[in-house]
Image (cartoon, rainbow, N blue to C red):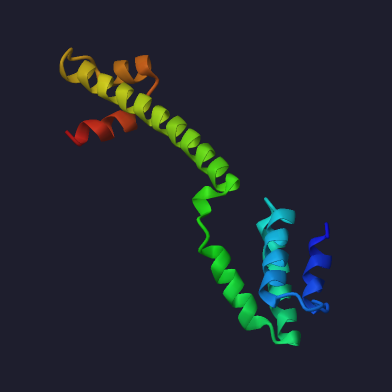
Length: 140
């Protein structure tokens, strides 16, 4: 089924002798695929699924399957790997930016202490606020 809402209703259907856990596993994994990127929709579907599962006394089996799926090796999923790559990329960008800022502050402090330039001159030349520069000088 290509509709998350219709898939949720499948919990009420006759499983025709199929193992209940297998059917529930299929429903949950298919829901995750269909709602990929929309955690709000997945959450709504899961709440409805949990509520409907009580009509067929399947809440314990649903809980078992949910637990089993959570225990899967998430780091092996392609979506996890994509997310990690994006996170690393963002981390590198932030790190570079912070490193540049620290380098500028370090240079500014040297210009003031070693070359006896005024805080105002250094702040203007390196485009740093005077207050920010004073804050770092006070830490020394």
